[in-house]
Image (cartoon, rainbow, N blue to C red; front, top):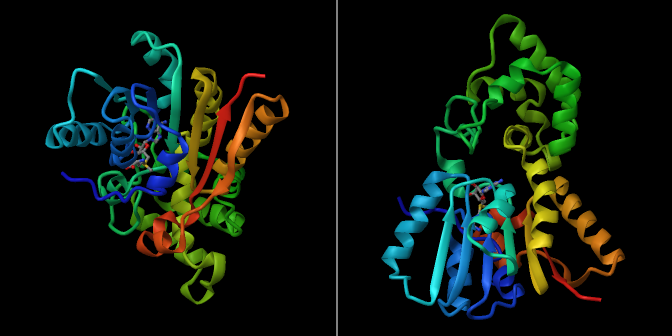
Length: 303
Ligand SMILES: C[S@@+](CC[C@H](N)C(=O)[O-])C[C@H]1O[C@@H](n2cnc3c(N)ncnc32)[C@H](O)[C@@H]1O
């Protein structure tokens, strides 16, 4: 039941929000709750925290954490939302919140989700190729693999994970599904291993499965589309002097964040708090998953 997720850039991200007690803050990606707990602490347990997660398990875990840590008092309101963060506007409207002092997004998935063999995001255990965080969505990873045209598969692998062997992989997938459909993580792993045999694995191709699974996960969960929708909504919601901090984990995400911030900077709407922050060597060693993390933080300004 307890989270296995190690929060990435915990102190750096929360400190960058410049939290004040009695303020209103949003954590759009609750996950294991590490950032949210630190936000609450820096708020002195006074004010409002709104936390989103698509994953009902993450929500349950955080509710239990609040009880376990006895985090409740009359000056604090914690609103936990089991929904997509793109619903930000309507959630704030419903709760009569007009402006907030800080927003944090820590993109992607938590370790708890990677380890959940029912989702099929991890290729360590054999399971159905599902990959949906939001189970109300119709399309699973296996639907994409069995349904997309070869050209669409190439685009998916190239655009979402910079996969160099995208063409060969797409061809192999099309070949495989002539006989039978691709159903499990084991099926997909076997295809990837045919395209990139173990003897070829070095440098950026050291772990080709990880990239292939990443591309599918991003596609199934509309991760880039969600991020593109979130940024303007979050920016609109921020009060002047409010800060937006985003932690991304791959170039596709970071490009979206960087370009959005650049456009706001060109229009004199933001100040950079710092251009880019990455985990220390110690953090990367203790939590290898953090090594691709990039934190960008901006402050909304009135000019
Ligand atoms: C990297 S984890 C966050 C970890 C968290 N910051 C912590 O300290 O434990 C990302 C979380 O965001 C959630 N998530 C991803 N996309 C989402 C979306 N569009 N709306 C709401 N939650 C989302 C995932 O379900 C996952 O739990």
